[in-house]
Image (cartoon, rainbow, N blue to C red; front, top):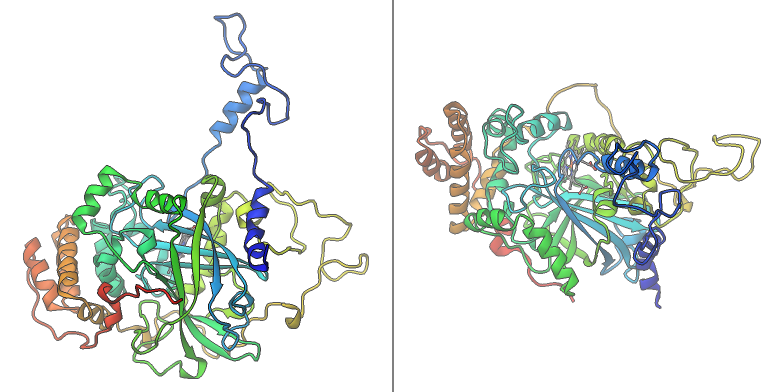
Length: 537
Ligand code: HEM
Protein backbone atom coordinates (compact mmCIF):
# COMPACT_ATOMS: atom_id res chain seq x y z
CA UNK A 1 0.00 0.00 0.00
CA UNK A 2 1.48 3.36 -0.95
CA UNK A 3 1.73 6.38 1.30
CA UNK A 4 -1.21 8.13 -0.32
CA UNK A 5 -3.69 5.41 0.44
CA UNK A 6 -2.57 4.97 4.02
CA UNK A 7 -3.16 8.68 4.54
CA UNK A 8 -6.70 8.56 3.20
CA UNK A 9 -7.45 5.35 5.03
CA UNK A 10 -6.63 6.93 8.37
CA UNK A 11 -10.13 8.35 8.78
CA UNK A 12 -11.73 5.20 7.44
CA UNK A 13 -9.79 3.03 9.89
CA UNK A 14 -10.68 5.34 12.75
CA UNK A 15 -14.38 5.11 11.89
CA UNK A 16 -14.12 1.34 11.47
CA UNK A 17 -13.11 0.99 15.13
CA UNK A 18 -16.51 2.31 16.13
CA UNK A 19 -18.58 0.23 13.77
CA UNK A 20 -20.79 -2.51 15.16
CA UNK A 21 -22.27 -5.24 13.04
CA UNK A 22 -25.40 -6.61 14.77
CA UNK A 23 -26.09 -9.23 12.15
CA UNK A 24 -26.15 -12.85 13.35
CA UNK A 25 -25.78 -11.83 17.00
CA UNK A 26 -28.01 -12.64 19.94
CA UNK A 27 -30.08 -9.72 21.21
CA UNK A 28 -28.94 -8.24 24.52
CA UNK A 29 -29.75 -5.29 26.75
CA UNK A 30 -27.32 -2.35 26.81
CA UNK A 31 -25.70 -4.12 29.77
CA UNK A 32 -24.97 -7.16 27.63
CA UNK A 33 -27.59 -9.43 29.18
CA UNK A 34 -29.12 -11.76 26.60
CA UNK A 35 -32.81 -11.08 26.07
CA UNK A 36 -35.28 -13.92 25.69
CA UNK A 37 -38.43 -12.02 24.72
CA UNK A 38 -38.81 -8.90 22.52
CA UNK A 39 -42.44 -9.12 21.50
CA UNK A 40 -44.46 -9.34 24.71
CA UNK A 41 -43.92 -7.20 27.78
CA UNK A 42 -43.88 -8.73 31.24
CA UNK A 43 -47.44 -8.75 32.64
CA UNK A 44 -49.24 -9.66 35.80
CA UNK A 45 -51.27 -12.44 34.19
CA UNK A 46 -51.54 -12.90 30.48
CA UNK A 47 -54.28 -10.23 30.17
CA UNK A 48 -52.96 -8.11 33.07
CA UNK A 49 -51.02 -4.80 33.33
CA UNK A 50 -47.38 -4.45 32.31
CA UNK A 51 -44.90 -4.60 35.17
CA UNK A 52 -42.29 -1.94 35.95
CA UNK A 53 -39.67 -4.59 36.50
CA UNK A 54 -39.57 -5.42 32.77
CA UNK A 55 -36.17 -3.73 32.35
CA UNK A 56 -35.87 -4.65 28.69
CA UNK A 57 -39.21 -3.02 27.87
CA UNK A 58 -38.22 0.10 29.85
CA UNK A 59 -34.79 0.39 28.28
CA UNK A 60 -36.09 -0.17 24.75
CA UNK A 61 -38.84 2.41 25.16
CA UNK A 62 -36.67 4.96 26.93
CA UNK A 63 -34.04 4.85 24.24
CA UNK A 64 -36.67 5.25 21.57
CA UNK A 65 -38.21 8.18 23.45
CA UNK A 66 -34.83 9.92 23.35
CA UNK A 67 -33.86 9.16 19.76
CA UNK A 68 -34.31 12.63 18.31
CA UNK A 69 -31.86 15.47 18.65
CA UNK A 70 -32.59 19.05 17.56
CA UNK A 71 -32.17 19.59 13.86
CA UNK A 72 -29.69 22.24 12.74
CA UNK A 73 -31.17 25.72 13.20
CA UNK A 74 -30.32 26.25 9.51
CA UNK A 75 -29.16 23.75 6.87
CA UNK A 76 -31.22 21.01 8.56
CA UNK A 77 -31.80 19.04 5.37
CA UNK A 78 -28.49 17.65 4.21
CA UNK A 79 -26.67 14.69 2.75
CA UNK A 80 -23.01 13.76 2.94
CA UNK A 81 -20.23 11.56 1.60
CA UNK A 82 -16.60 10.69 2.25
CA UNK A 83 -13.76 11.31 -0.14
CA UNK A 84 -10.25 12.53 -0.61
CA UNK A 85 -8.45 15.69 -1.64
CA UNK A 86 -5.09 16.25 -3.29
CA UNK A 87 -3.31 19.42 -4.49
CA UNK A 88 -1.92 19.54 -8.02
CA UNK A 89 1.10 21.63 -6.98
CA UNK A 90 2.57 22.92 -3.76
CA UNK A 91 1.00 26.14 -2.47
CA UNK A 92 3.98 26.77 -0.18
CA UNK A 93 4.56 30.19 -1.73
CA UNK A 94 1.21 31.32 -0.29
CA UNK A 95 0.36 29.10 2.68
CA UNK A 96 2.15 26.79 5.07
CA UNK A 97 -0.94 24.56 5.37
CA UNK A 98 0.66 21.14 5.00
CA UNK A 99 -2.27 19.55 3.18
CA UNK A 100 -1.82 22.23 0.49
CA UNK A 101 1.97 21.86 0.28
CA UNK A 102 2.51 18.31 -0.86
CA UNK A 103 1.05 17.06 -4.17
CA UNK A 104 1.79 13.46 -3.19
CA UNK A 105 -0.42 13.73 -0.12
CA UNK A 106 -4.08 12.70 -0.11
CA UNK A 107 -6.24 14.13 2.66
CA UNK A 108 -9.45 12.41 3.75
CA UNK A 109 -12.54 14.66 3.52
CA UNK A 110 -16.19 14.55 4.55
CA UNK A 111 -18.63 16.79 2.64
CA UNK A 112 -22.19 17.67 3.61
CA UNK A 113 -24.49 19.36 1.09
CA UNK A 114 -27.68 20.98 2.33
CA UNK A 115 -30.55 23.32 1.75
CA UNK A 116 -30.84 26.25 4.15
CA UNK A 117 -34.48 26.99 4.81
CA UNK A 118 -36.40 23.72 5.04
CA UNK A 119 -36.66 21.36 7.97
CA UNK A 120 -34.95 17.98 8.02
CA UNK A 121 -37.73 16.29 6.06
CA UNK A 122 -38.36 19.00 3.45
CA UNK A 123 -38.07 18.58 -0.32
CA UNK A 124 -34.67 18.98 -1.93
CA UNK A 125 -35.31 20.70 -5.26
CA UNK A 126 -36.71 23.91 -3.77
CA UNK A 127 -35.42 27.37 -4.71
CA UNK A 128 -32.82 27.95 -2.01
CA UNK A 129 -29.13 28.42 -1.30
CA UNK A 130 -27.23 25.12 -0.97
CA UNK A 131 -24.67 24.51 1.75
CA UNK A 132 -21.37 22.93 0.70
CA UNK A 133 -19.38 22.09 3.84
CA UNK A 134 -16.06 20.22 3.67
CA UNK A 135 -14.08 18.81 6.56
CA UNK A 136 -10.45 18.06 5.72
CA UNK A 137 -8.97 15.59 8.22
CA UNK A 138 -5.41 16.90 7.95
CA UNK A 139 -2.36 15.78 9.93
CA UNK A 140 -2.37 19.21 11.58
CA UNK A 141 -5.97 18.99 12.72
CA UNK A 142 -9.37 19.36 11.08
CA UNK A 143 -9.78 22.19 8.59
CA UNK A 144 -13.42 23.04 7.74
CA UNK A 145 -14.37 24.98 4.61
CA UNK A 146 -18.02 25.73 5.41
CA UNK A 147 -19.34 27.24 2.19
CA UNK A 148 -22.39 27.71 0.03
CA UNK A 149 -23.12 27.29 -3.68
CA UNK A 150 -23.32 31.08 -4.07
CA UNK A 151 -20.32 33.40 -3.56
CA UNK A 152 -22.03 36.18 -1.60
CA UNK A 153 -24.44 36.45 1.32
CA UNK A 154 -27.64 38.29 2.29
CA UNK A 155 -26.15 40.40 5.07
CA UNK A 156 -22.84 41.99 5.98
CA UNK A 157 -22.81 41.66 9.74
CA UNK A 158 -23.46 38.54 11.82
CA UNK A 159 -25.63 40.47 14.26
CA UNK A 160 -28.37 40.39 11.60
CA UNK A 161 -28.27 36.62 11.05
CA UNK A 162 -31.01 35.75 13.57
CA UNK A 163 -33.25 38.37 11.87
CA UNK A 164 -32.52 37.02 8.39
CA UNK A 165 -33.26 33.45 9.45
CA UNK A 166 -36.41 34.37 11.37
CA UNK A 167 -37.62 36.09 8.20
CA UNK A 168 -36.77 33.24 5.82
CA UNK A 169 -38.00 30.35 7.98
CA UNK A 170 -41.70 29.41 8.00
CA UNK A 171 -43.80 32.18 9.53
CA UNK A 172 -44.30 31.65 13.27
CA UNK A 173 -48.10 31.92 13.38
CA UNK A 174 -48.76 29.15 10.83
CA UNK A 175 -45.42 27.42 10.06
CA UNK A 176 -45.74 28.15 6.35
CA UNK A 177 -44.14 27.86 3.86
CA UNK A 178 -41.90 24.80 4.19
CA UNK A 179 -38.72 24.83 2.17
CA UNK A 180 -39.48 28.01 0.24
CA UNK A 181 -38.53 31.65 0.39
CA UNK A 182 -41.66 32.91 -1.37
CA UNK A 183 -43.50 34.59 1.50
CA UNK A 184 -44.14 37.96 3.10
CA UNK A 185 -41.63 37.96 5.94
CA UNK A 186 -38.69 37.05 3.70
CA UNK A 187 -39.42 39.78 1.15
CA UNK A 188 -40.20 42.26 3.89
CA UNK A 189 -36.72 41.55 5.27
CA UNK A 190 -35.17 41.94 1.81
CA UNK A 191 -36.81 45.31 1.14
CA UNK A 192 -35.80 46.63 4.54
CA UNK A 193 -32.24 45.27 4.45
CA UNK A 194 -31.15 46.20 0.96
CA UNK A 195 -27.63 44.81 1.26
CA UNK A 196 -29.41 41.55 0.35
CA UNK A 197 -29.92 42.71 -3.28
CA UNK A 198 -26.93 40.92 -4.77
CA UNK A 199 -27.60 37.62 -3.00
CA UNK A 200 -31.29 37.74 -3.93
CA UNK A 201 -30.24 38.00 -7.61
CA UNK A 202 -28.32 34.74 -7.21
CA UNK A 203 -31.27 33.21 -5.38
CA UNK A 204 -33.63 34.12 -8.25
CA UNK A 205 -31.18 32.66 -10.76
CA UNK A 206 -30.86 29.07 -11.92
CA UNK A 207 -28.09 28.56 -9.35
CA UNK A 208 -30.80 28.19 -6.69
CA UNK A 209 -32.27 25.06 -8.32
CA UNK A 210 -29.25 22.83 -8.98
CA UNK A 211 -29.63 19.72 -11.12
CA UNK A 212 -27.39 17.77 -8.75
CA UNK A 213 -25.05 18.29 -5.82
CA UNK A 214 -22.39 17.04 -8.28
CA UNK A 215 -23.07 20.00 -10.57
CA UNK A 216 -22.81 22.98 -8.24
CA UNK A 217 -19.97 25.34 -7.54
CA UNK A 218 -19.00 25.92 -3.92
CA UNK A 219 -17.68 29.13 -2.39
CA UNK A 220 -16.09 29.92 0.95
CA UNK A 221 -17.85 33.32 0.61
CA UNK A 222 -15.70 35.17 3.12
CA UNK A 223 -12.28 36.58 2.50
CA UNK A 224 -9.81 34.43 4.41
CA UNK A 225 -6.04 34.76 4.76
CA UNK A 226 -3.25 32.56 3.52
CA UNK A 227 0.01 32.96 5.46
CA UNK A 228 3.28 31.40 4.34
CA UNK A 229 6.28 30.34 6.42
CA UNK A 230 7.88 33.77 6.06
CA UNK A 231 4.76 35.37 7.56
CA UNK A 232 3.70 36.93 4.25
CA UNK A 233 -0.10 37.07 3.85
CA UNK A 234 -2.53 37.01 0.94
CA UNK A 235 -6.26 37.52 1.06
CA UNK A 236 -7.91 34.41 -0.34
CA UNK A 237 -11.33 33.34 -1.55
CA UNK A 238 -12.07 29.63 -1.99
CA UNK A 239 -13.96 28.04 -4.90
CA UNK A 240 -15.09 24.52 -5.69
CA UNK A 241 -15.60 23.90 -9.41
CA UNK A 242 -17.56 20.76 -10.33
CA UNK A 243 -15.82 18.71 -12.98
CA UNK A 244 -19.21 17.94 -14.54
CA UNK A 245 -19.87 21.68 -14.99
CA UNK A 246 -22.67 23.70 -13.41
CA UNK A 247 -26.17 22.58 -14.35
CA UNK A 248 -29.58 23.47 -13.04
CA UNK A 249 -33.13 22.31 -13.26
CA UNK A 250 -35.74 24.58 -14.75
CA UNK A 251 -38.40 25.74 -12.30
CA UNK A 252 -41.14 23.59 -13.75
CA UNK A 253 -38.98 20.46 -13.41
CA UNK A 254 -37.90 21.46 -9.91
CA UNK A 255 -41.49 21.80 -8.74
CA UNK A 256 -42.59 18.49 -10.22
CA UNK A 257 -39.59 16.65 -8.78
CA UNK A 258 -40.33 18.13 -5.34
CA UNK A 259 -43.59 16.24 -5.42
CA UNK A 260 -42.48 13.06 -7.12
CA UNK A 261 -39.13 12.59 -5.39
CA UNK A 262 -38.38 14.90 -2.49
CA UNK A 263 -35.08 12.96 -2.10
CA UNK A 264 -33.93 13.72 -5.64
CA UNK A 265 -30.52 15.20 -4.74
CA UNK A 266 -29.50 12.67 -2.11
CA UNK A 267 -30.62 9.82 -4.34
CA UNK A 268 -28.50 11.22 -7.17
CA UNK A 269 -25.41 11.58 -4.96
CA UNK A 270 -25.85 8.21 -3.27
CA UNK A 271 -26.44 6.32 -6.50
CA UNK A 272 -23.62 7.99 -8.40
CA UNK A 273 -21.18 6.97 -5.65
CA UNK A 274 -22.61 3.45 -5.37
CA UNK A 275 -22.18 2.98 -9.12
CA UNK A 276 -18.58 4.28 -9.13
CA UNK A 277 -19.37 7.59 -10.85
CA UNK A 278 -17.47 9.57 -8.25
CA UNK A 279 -18.35 13.28 -7.99
CA UNK A 280 -15.28 15.47 -8.45
CA UNK A 281 -14.66 19.11 -7.60
CA UNK A 282 -11.57 21.16 -8.29
CA UNK A 283 -10.44 23.58 -5.60
CA UNK A 284 -9.65 27.08 -6.80
CA UNK A 285 -8.31 30.13 -5.00
CA UNK A 286 -8.42 33.82 -5.77
CA UNK A 287 -5.46 35.60 -4.19
CA UNK A 288 -4.89 39.26 -3.40
CA UNK A 289 -1.58 40.30 -1.81
CA UNK A 290 -1.99 42.01 1.57
CA UNK A 291 -0.69 45.33 0.10
CA UNK A 292 -3.49 45.43 -2.49
CA UNK A 293 -6.36 45.44 0.00
CA UNK A 294 -7.68 48.79 -1.27
CA UNK A 295 -7.10 48.37 -5.02
CA UNK A 296 -10.73 47.54 -5.87
CA UNK A 297 -13.94 49.49 -6.38
CA UNK A 298 -15.55 47.41 -3.61
CA UNK A 299 -14.41 46.45 -0.12
CA UNK A 300 -12.82 43.00 -0.28
CA UNK A 301 -14.05 42.28 3.27
CA UNK A 302 -17.72 42.83 2.32
CA UNK A 303 -19.44 39.42 2.07
CA UNK A 304 -22.10 40.82 -0.28
CA UNK A 305 -19.35 41.32 -2.90
CA UNK A 306 -17.51 38.82 -5.06
CA UNK A 307 -14.14 39.27 -6.71
CA UNK A 308 -14.86 39.20 -10.45
CA UNK A 309 -12.87 36.31 -11.91
CA UNK A 310 -11.77 38.50 -14.80
CA UNK A 311 -10.08 40.86 -12.32
CA UNK A 312 -8.76 38.23 -9.91
CA UNK A 313 -8.39 34.91 -11.73
CA UNK A 314 -9.25 31.65 -10.01
CA UNK A 315 -6.14 29.52 -9.70
CA UNK A 316 -7.07 25.83 -9.76
CA UNK A 317 -4.94 24.08 -7.14
CA UNK A 318 -6.35 20.62 -6.48
CA UNK A 319 -9.15 18.12 -6.73
CA UNK A 320 -11.58 16.43 -4.38
CA UNK A 321 -13.23 13.11 -5.20
CA UNK A 322 -16.21 11.80 -3.25
CA UNK A 323 -15.98 8.02 -3.30
CA UNK A 324 -17.75 6.50 -0.31
CA UNK A 325 -21.24 6.78 1.08
CA UNK A 326 -21.77 6.89 4.82
CA UNK A 327 -22.65 3.75 6.74
CA UNK A 328 -25.07 5.48 9.07
CA UNK A 329 -26.67 8.84 8.35
CA UNK A 330 -27.28 9.76 11.98
CA UNK A 331 -23.81 8.85 13.24
CA UNK A 332 -22.02 10.63 10.41
CA UNK A 333 -24.16 13.12 8.46
CA UNK A 334 -26.23 14.32 11.42
CA UNK A 335 -23.53 14.31 14.08
CA UNK A 336 -20.86 16.02 12.03
CA UNK A 337 -20.01 19.46 13.39
CA UNK A 338 -18.51 21.94 10.93
CA UNK A 339 -17.09 25.27 12.02
CA UNK A 340 -15.48 28.03 9.93
CA UNK A 341 -13.13 28.56 12.88
CA UNK A 342 -11.54 25.11 12.49
CA UNK A 343 -8.29 26.17 10.78
CA UNK A 344 -4.73 24.90 10.41
CA UNK A 345 -1.45 26.87 10.38
CA UNK A 346 -1.30 28.87 7.12
CA UNK A 347 -5.03 29.69 7.04
CA UNK A 348 -6.39 32.62 9.05
CA UNK A 349 -9.37 34.96 9.28
CA UNK A 350 -10.04 38.52 8.24
CA UNK A 351 -12.17 41.28 9.72
CA UNK A 352 -15.20 40.40 7.57
CA UNK A 353 -17.91 41.09 10.19
CA UNK A 354 -20.03 38.19 8.98
CA UNK A 355 -17.16 35.75 9.39
CA UNK A 356 -16.29 37.15 12.80
CA UNK A 357 -19.79 36.32 14.08
CA UNK A 358 -19.81 32.86 12.52
CA UNK A 359 -16.71 32.08 14.56
CA UNK A 360 -18.92 32.30 17.64
CA UNK A 361 -22.13 30.74 16.37
CA UNK A 362 -21.19 27.22 15.28
CA UNK A 363 -19.74 25.83 18.51
CA UNK A 364 -22.47 27.58 20.45
CA UNK A 365 -25.27 25.86 18.50
CA UNK A 366 -23.47 22.51 18.52
CA UNK A 367 -23.23 22.57 22.31
CA UNK A 368 -27.01 22.39 22.27
CA UNK A 369 -27.54 20.27 19.17
CA UNK A 370 -25.00 17.62 20.14
CA UNK A 371 -25.65 17.75 23.87
CA UNK A 372 -22.61 19.24 25.59
CA UNK A 373 -18.93 19.96 25.13
CA UNK A 374 -17.66 16.52 24.09
CA UNK A 375 -18.94 16.30 20.52
CA UNK A 376 -15.35 16.46 19.23
CA UNK A 377 -15.10 12.87 20.55
CA UNK A 378 -17.84 11.62 18.23
CA UNK A 379 -16.24 9.36 15.60
CA UNK A 380 -17.07 11.60 12.63
CA UNK A 381 -15.62 14.70 14.33
CA UNK A 382 -12.36 13.23 15.66
CA UNK A 383 -9.25 14.53 13.96
CA UNK A 384 -6.90 11.88 12.57
CA UNK A 385 -4.07 13.41 14.58
CA UNK A 386 -3.97 13.05 18.38
CA UNK A 387 -5.46 15.80 20.58
CA UNK A 388 -4.28 16.73 24.06
CA UNK A 389 -5.26 19.51 26.46
CA UNK A 390 -6.60 20.11 29.94
CA UNK A 391 -10.25 20.26 29.00
CA UNK A 392 -12.07 17.70 31.10
CA UNK A 393 -15.39 16.08 31.97
CA UNK A 394 -18.84 17.14 30.75
CA UNK A 395 -21.83 15.06 29.62
CA UNK A 396 -20.95 11.95 27.66
CA UNK A 397 -17.17 12.20 28.13
CA UNK A 398 -15.50 9.14 26.59
CA UNK A 399 -11.80 9.78 27.03
CA UNK A 400 -10.18 8.44 30.19
CA UNK A 401 -7.48 11.01 30.85
CA UNK A 402 -4.92 9.60 33.24
CA UNK A 403 -2.80 11.29 35.87
CA UNK A 404 -3.16 13.63 38.85
CA UNK A 405 -2.69 16.98 37.17
CA UNK A 406 -5.15 18.57 34.74
CA UNK A 407 -4.00 22.17 34.64
CA UNK A 408 -1.32 24.06 32.78
CA UNK A 409 1.79 25.38 34.52
CA UNK A 410 2.41 22.99 37.31
CA UNK A 411 5.32 21.45 39.16
CA UNK A 412 3.67 18.21 40.26
CA UNK A 413 3.67 16.37 36.96
CA UNK A 414 6.06 16.03 34.09
CA UNK A 415 4.91 15.82 30.50
CA UNK A 416 1.48 17.42 30.82
CA UNK A 417 0.58 19.11 27.49
CA UNK A 418 2.69 22.16 26.70
CA UNK A 419 1.92 24.70 23.94
CA UNK A 420 3.86 24.00 20.75
CA UNK A 421 6.33 26.48 19.25
CA UNK A 422 5.51 27.69 15.72
CA UNK A 423 8.24 25.46 14.26
CA UNK A 424 6.57 22.54 16.03
CA UNK A 425 3.28 23.36 14.34
CA UNK A 426 1.80 25.66 17.01
CA UNK A 427 -0.86 27.92 15.51
CA UNK A 428 0.04 31.61 15.65
CA UNK A 429 -2.65 34.17 14.83
CA UNK A 430 -1.68 36.54 12.04
CA UNK A 431 -0.40 39.77 13.55
CA UNK A 432 -2.67 42.14 11.69
CA UNK A 433 -2.38 45.73 12.85
CA UNK A 434 -5.68 47.16 14.07
CA UNK A 435 -6.20 50.69 15.23
CA UNK A 436 -9.52 52.40 15.70
CA UNK A 437 -12.30 53.48 18.00
CA UNK A 438 -14.86 50.95 19.21
CA UNK A 439 -17.96 51.73 17.21
CA UNK A 440 -21.22 50.05 16.09
CA UNK A 441 -21.74 51.13 12.50
CA UNK A 442 -21.52 50.09 8.86
CA UNK A 443 -18.29 51.08 7.12
CA UNK A 444 -18.83 53.58 4.27
CA UNK A 445 -17.06 51.09 2.04
CA UNK A 446 -19.92 48.60 2.69
CA UNK A 447 -22.71 50.95 1.58
CA UNK A 448 -22.97 50.20 -2.15
CA UNK A 449 -25.65 47.49 -2.37
CA UNK A 450 -26.49 47.51 -6.07
CA UNK A 451 -23.40 47.69 -8.32
CA UNK A 452 -22.62 44.01 -8.15
CA UNK A 453 -26.29 43.02 -8.26
CA UNK A 454 -26.46 44.90 -11.56
CA UNK A 455 -23.17 43.38 -12.70
CA UNK A 456 -24.68 39.95 -12.06
CA UNK A 457 -27.72 40.86 -14.16
CA UNK A 458 -25.51 42.27 -16.94
CA UNK A 459 -23.56 39.00 -17.02
CA UNK A 460 -26.56 36.77 -17.72
CA UNK A 461 -27.50 35.30 -21.11
CA UNK A 462 -31.07 36.08 -22.36
CA UNK A 463 -32.53 32.74 -21.12
CA UNK A 464 -30.89 33.24 -17.71
CA UNK A 465 -32.39 36.74 -17.52
CA UNK A 466 -35.82 35.37 -18.41
CA UNK A 467 -35.53 32.75 -15.65
CA UNK A 468 -34.70 35.49 -13.12
CA UNK A 469 -37.72 37.55 -14.24
CA UNK A 470 -39.94 34.45 -14.00
CA UNK A 471 -38.56 33.54 -10.58
CA UNK A 472 -39.03 36.99 -9.05
CA UNK A 473 -42.52 37.20 -10.54
CA UNK A 474 -43.42 33.81 -9.06
CA UNK A 475 -41.90 34.63 -5.67
CA UNK A 476 -43.49 38.08 -5.32
CA UNK A 477 -46.73 36.61 -6.63
CA UNK A 478 -46.85 34.57 -3.42
CA UNK A 479 -46.34 37.64 -1.22
CA UNK A 480 -49.71 38.70 0.16
CA UNK A 481 -48.91 42.26 1.24
CA UNK A 482 -49.19 44.66 -1.76
CA UNK A 483 -46.99 47.06 0.17
CA UNK A 484 -44.15 44.55 0.56
CA UNK A 485 -44.43 43.62 -3.13
CA UNK A 486 -44.15 47.25 -4.14
CA UNK A 487 -41.17 47.84 -1.85
CA UNK A 488 -39.31 44.92 -3.44
CA UNK A 489 -40.16 46.08 -6.97
CA UNK A 490 -38.93 49.59 -6.10
CA UNK A 491 -35.76 48.15 -4.61
CA UNK A 492 -34.91 46.07 -7.68
CA UNK A 493 -35.41 49.09 -9.92
CA UNK A 494 -31.96 49.98 -8.55
CA UNK A 495 -30.64 46.79 -10.13
CA UNK A 496 -32.27 46.89 -13.57
CA UNK A 497 -35.40 48.35 -15.18
CA UNK A 498 -35.17 45.51 -17.71
CA UNK A 499 -35.69 43.10 -14.80
CA UNK A 500 -38.20 45.01 -12.76
CA UNK A 501 -40.59 46.22 -15.46
CA UNK A 502 -41.92 42.77 -16.50
CA UNK A 503 -41.96 41.67 -12.84
CA UNK A 504 -44.07 44.68 -11.80
CA UNK A 505 -46.43 44.11 -14.71
CA UNK A 506 -46.59 40.37 -13.92
CA UNK A 507 -47.75 40.94 -10.33
CA UNK A 508 -49.83 44.05 -10.89
CA UNK A 509 -47.47 46.44 -9.07
CA UNK A 510 -46.64 49.98 -10.12
CA UNK A 511 -43.71 50.17 -12.55
CA UNK A 512 -41.10 52.38 -10.85
CA UNK A 513 -39.65 55.54 -12.40
CA UNK A 514 -36.80 54.64 -14.77
CA UNK A 515 -33.37 54.66 -13.11
CA UNK A 516 -29.81 54.52 -14.35
CA UNK A 517 -28.35 51.02 -13.96
CA UNK A 518 -26.04 50.85 -10.93
CA UNK A 519 -23.20 49.47 -13.05
CA UNK A 520 -22.27 48.87 -16.65
CA UNK A 521 -19.79 46.14 -15.72
CA UNK A 522 -20.30 42.50 -16.47
CA UNK A 523 -18.35 39.42 -15.43
CA UNK A 524 -18.79 36.70 -18.06
CA UNK A 525 -17.67 33.97 -15.61
CA UNK A 526 -20.91 34.51 -13.65
CA UNK A 527 -23.05 33.09 -16.44
CA UNK A 528 -23.68 29.38 -16.07
CA UNK A 529 -22.95 29.13 -19.79
CA UNK A 530 -19.30 29.90 -19.02
CA UNK A 531 -18.59 27.70 -16.00
CA UNK A 532 -15.52 25.44 -16.09
CA UNK A 533 -16.33 22.01 -17.48
CA UNK A 534 -13.00 20.33 -18.13
CA UNK A 535 -10.73 19.04 -15.37
CA UNK A 536 -6.99 19.53 -15.40
CA UNK A 537 -5.12 16.33 -16.07
C1 HEM B 1 -24.84 25.83 9.33
C2 HEM B 1 -24.79 30.04 11.61
C3 HEM B 1 -23.50 32.29 7.56
C4 HEM B 1 -22.75 28.00 5.56
C5 HEM B 1 -25.00 26.78 10.27
C6 HEM B 1 -25.46 26.55 11.61
C7 HEM B 1 -25.43 27.74 12.24
C8 HEM B 1 -24.98 28.72 11.32
C9 HEM B 1 -25.82 28.01 13.68
C10 HEM B 1 -25.85 25.20 12.18
C11 HEM B 1 -24.61 24.47 12.55
C12 HEM B 1 -24.85 23.17 13.22
O1 HEM B 1 -25.91 22.96 13.83
O2 HEM B 1 -23.93 22.32 13.18
C13 HEM B 1 -24.41 31.00 10.71
C14 HEM B 1 -24.26 32.41 11.01
C15 HEM B 1 -23.94 33.04 9.86
C16 HEM B 1 -23.86 32.04 8.84
C17 HEM B 1 -24.45 33.03 12.38
C18 HEM B 1 -23.68 34.48 9.59
C19 HEM B 1 -23.43 35.33 10.53
C20 HEM B 1 -23.13 31.32 6.68
C21 HEM B 1 -22.46 31.57 5.45
C22 HEM B 1 -22.25 30.36 4.90
C23 HEM B 1 -22.78 29.35 5.78
C24 HEM B 1 -22.04 32.93 4.90
C25 HEM B 1 -21.55 30.05 3.63
C26 HEM B 1 -20.34 30.54 3.39
C27 HEM B 1 -23.28 27.06 6.39
C28 HEM B 1 -23.35 25.66 6.08
C29 HEM B 1 -23.96 25.03 7.16
C30 HEM B 1 -24.24 26.06 8.12
C31 HEM B 1 -22.86 24.99 4.81
C32 HEM B 1 -24.30 23.56 7.28
C33 HEM B 1 -23.13 22.79 7.81
C34 HEM B 1 -23.49 21.33 7.83
O3 HEM B 1 -23.71 20.78 6.73
O4 HEM B 1 -23.53 20.73 8.91
N1 HEM B 1 -24.72 28.11 10.12
N2 HEM B 1 -24.15 30.82 9.40
N3 HEM B 1 -23.31 29.97 6.86
N4 HEM B 1 -23.82 27.27 7.63
FE1 HEM B 1 -23.93 29.02 8.52
